[in-house]
Length: 559
Image 1 (cartoon, rainbow, N blue to C red):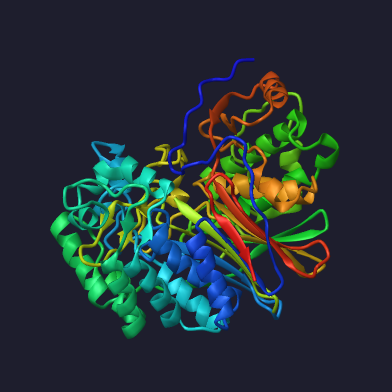
Image 2 (cartoon, rainbow, N blue to C red):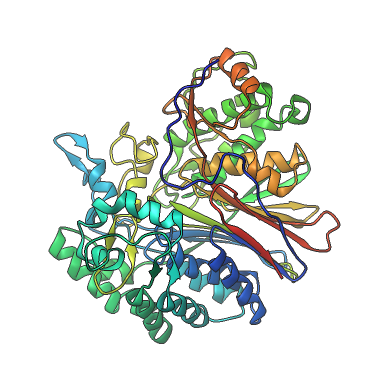
């Protein structure tokens, strides 16, 4: 059958149609990220005496320089750490709504206005990434935040050659970036033209911000000069973030969630991540069938996976929100609930789906553009970290003189029930805007263990496709036995319930497409679905293996 015209999802720049990826190995440590400069920074941190946690923070701060349209200290993150002593840390560095935020702040003439939640001063949540990196180092690192900031500041000062991905995204968002003085000063030349591929791109203001935080500590950012500059700009431009908002920000230690999947323990991030909950929910559904018998990339296995995604995303839209504000049922990740959902799946036809209701849903609850990178070291420390400013260049706002891009995470709230956000996701009152609340996230940093020993750290970037990518990567490795690089390169699908369509990469086989269409799936073909990174133990257990998604040209490096 003829495929529909493909629509390119422009949040990422993808490379080629025949995906391929180089595998990195190392005995002392491993790092995989979307940018080689950042990957090298992570390896260098370990060589300077740091561990996998230091490598993760070094990678994160450097990504804020060389990949700043996806993440940075003006955004947020989730960090999942498995320490060498076997204990887990789940650090919530998610952005928060300012204290002056209101339930209906994005409603205009009775309708949710997503332009306000995606671009400009009202779109910005209080950033949490920097506080989370500091907490991770204090709890489990060896080097200081100052050390990592100064390393990344030097890269910002010296500059780097802008790559095609950065240049493409800059061109795509140029009109919105030009609306703000601080952004124009960073991303455009004196003649008003945007930086191009191959240009030396220096960020002296960002380098200075990094150095000031290194010298004065977090107080410079959270309550000091950076916060004061932010409040001043917000007041002049109709924003609501204040010094008090920044000084009150705290990263939170949360309890990781886990499930057993075919003899492996899968540990992921709890709410306000929806990713961890629904990754485990989907794995529990899939475990009721033998995927290996159905076969990798077949219409049978892909139909089962797509219907599992649909069921989970319907639950996401209804139940998920910040557990400090709403009751999120733990039963969503129970085996019993998964069996009830699995029983609804018809292997020959698509099904209509509404959200389910787990047993004891009201009593047993969780308590109070993006990039992913994974690291591990020979001491037994493993890290999965996903960081973001949300859409490309976040709110498009750079606070003048700071070089810091502020996020647009307010768009990850449900600005109004039934109104889709940038990624087409709809939400309910559970994810409504409220002062101090953290918006729901799809970020899914995950660590997989076998017999108590970590064997894989992974995650992804790409809005709601983060969840489906992480699921597919786990299934490709654990069920289908693919090597890590092949698992990341395999064709992807994504079904998020609303809109009711199956997004698929154009590399998906014609036989599978025909079989899925016969079952009732309506396709939307895209050039690529998201970007994943992962690291693993080698099969003999003596070294590490790392791979970066070939769709985005990232790298893995070992030491």
